[in-house]
Length: 181
Image (tube, rainbow, N blue to C red; front, side, top):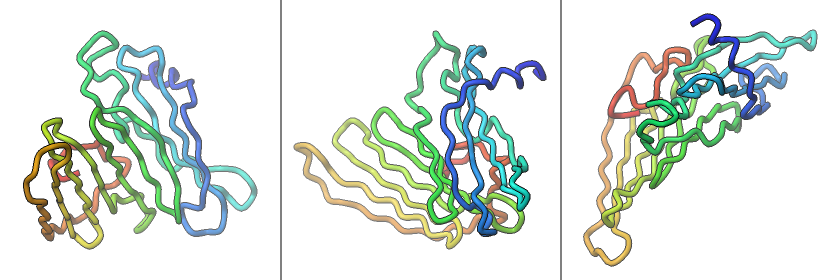
């Protein structure tokens, strides 16, 4: 497995922004192992140092699903990595679905990148559009559904409070490890 670590040679994306509020521009990159049958992604976070160098803070292959979880010729589950962004110090990992998308938001706090938000937009393919917005900092989770197409049923909106402590850390995070995020 150690030799596989050296196969993350294809840079998929690289974004810059101040992640730890020190006024220095940090960067995050996503690399891919194109040799592996599952084509996994590696997310790396680098903090800028005052001397102009960068220090690797996190390197994880769990935070982004593999491109081919069942192998290149296996079943395609419809999830695919789309992009990462840094906006106002928040690192977001965006993924596409066959009928929708989802996003995980992480903020550097308490010495770690902690999951502070999850949002998802999806269609069931049967006339229902759903949206989930989960603020893990406040514990507020809002789920809405509404009809599209020719169906005519009432919109729904459910708000629940669900405190998850400690907040999940990016280095340990796997998407959809739980039913909530």
